[in-house]
Amino acid sequence: MRGQQEISIGVDMGGTSIKFAVVRGAEIIAKGDPVQTKECGSPDGVVAAVGQRLRELREKYPAVRAIGMGLPGFVNHAAGIVDSLTNVPGWYDVPIRRILEEESGLPAAVENDANCMALAEWKLGAGRGMQDIVCLTLGTGVGAGVVAQGQLLRGYLGAAGELGQVGIDYRGRIGHYGNRGAVEDYIGNGELAREAQIRYAAAQGVYKPLSELTPIHLENAAKEGCPVALGIWNDTARKLAACLLTCHYILNPQAFIIGGGISKAGELLFDPLRRYLKAQIYPAHFEKLQLLPAKFGGEAGIIGAALLALEDLAVSR
Amino acid sequence: MRGQQEISIGVDMGGTSIKFAVVRGAEIIAKGDPVQTKECGSPDGVVAAVGQRLRELREKYPAVRAIGMGLPGFVNHAAGIVDSLTNVPGWYDVPIRRILEEESGLPAAVENDANCMALAEWKLGAGRGMQDIVCLTLGTGVGAGVVAQGQLLRGYLGAAGELGQVGIDYRGRIGHYGNRGAVEDYIGNGELAREAQIRYAAAQGVYKPLSELTPIHLENAAKEGCPVALGIWNDTARKLAACLLTCHYILNPQAFIIGGGISKAGELLFDPLRRYLKAQIYPAHFEKLQLLPAKFGGEAGIIGAALLALEDLAVSR
Image (cartoon, rainbow over all chains, first blue to last red; front, side):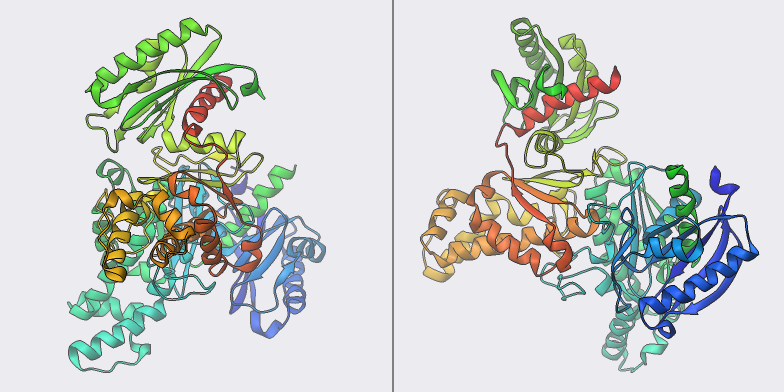
């Protein structure tokens, strides 16, 4: 596989910081200094700072063949344009691929950050060799990417795979786009903490600050047998299962690959999740459905972006 | 296009009857006498009756090149096997493609019936020329097929596109596979009638039998301004919108193509549906999303099955 030999630069833009790495296959050869997203101000500021880093890395690693960048929002891969970013103001209709190419002098590819993560898990991680997978990363929100019939699923406008917006309650909370009952409004880290706070107060008359109710706190409490914490994990599994069930019935994947913060709770999440899925899927199909932890952690996005750059380069040759 | 010239036989199996037609493109040249599903008894009985019809049609139309059959349940197209049928007992692991080929002496293809419908709408109907569509047929249940990135979406085990099972309430009713809140348990014809019965009794103290609360009755009542009937259509649109929203966020299709019984209510359904979608989708994406009535009616399945037969034949050549 090409990606094993050639090297490229992966850029992973988040709401907080922008990370850079020189990558060969799944191996990170070197990292560039991160850029603070907010300090850059406008898209122009981001572009200037990113361009600077890319030129530095290219000078140090002249064998770099291409640049791939993942961004948190609606990215039209085919057109090379950012339609809009979810939590970064000012990004509308930015022709980011062309800008990256001008700044770096190398061919570039751009994609939604969660799609980059899915690409890494598919080609180099837990989903290797499969044709149909759904990858999720569970954190503040739910990021996701879908591979269907051997293709990264992008849809008509490049906006496919937004699993965080899958509805689990048509009369539920109003979410980011006005949509009711989006699963990420029920199982994000913040929601877990708020729900735990209410339940501790009700069950034990104890007020716990949210900072003591992060996933790792809830994991430790559950492992010590705390019924409130166990209840939180069970309910999280139930709500996540509702989202995965819908994905199962629409996409019929071979595997769900799950990473990100709350997935680190391991069997506390996976065990009830498996039970909720088993109870709600046709048995012959459940038997063949795999539930896998992601191979890559926080670097999945950067590895996937770097890989995408080389894949697109191969297609354009 | 090949399908315009060559002819094939489409077979559409339902829980009640099995229909046959000789088809050229979207044109039905001739129909065979239907077979009553229940009178056949076992799968062997069905196969014998279907084989008989196929030989009759082939004798009359010697130019027939292939047979395509749609069946109501889990059909593995690649393997040519029926895994199970939803409402027809006794069908498990039936190698139906091989059987059809032996019975008819012609190459055969088999597929889920709703996928056949989607194929017809995609290649010859409302979705012509598009790469990403979701087709639904609304009746007793919700049948559906998905085209993603220019491919009929089948998934790992051929069970993709089961949109009737999309969950709209994770604490909702328990459905066919034990799954909670499946949309078809909320918007099927029977459910509309039951819900209307309750509301008429509550609002007007009137008991109406279910037979007077079919979609056509509710359509006529709504057109006369009856608030109970208008409420039923509005709520149906809201629940259907929840399903379509989830599809939008996962698949990002260019169009939803909607056919079947209750879709005949036209703007009574489509108008509130459009409003519920608009309120819950990112505006730049909603603008480009099409909501289209299906082109074909009850014959979509048979036309799609016949088309599939020719498409598979072309691939195998």
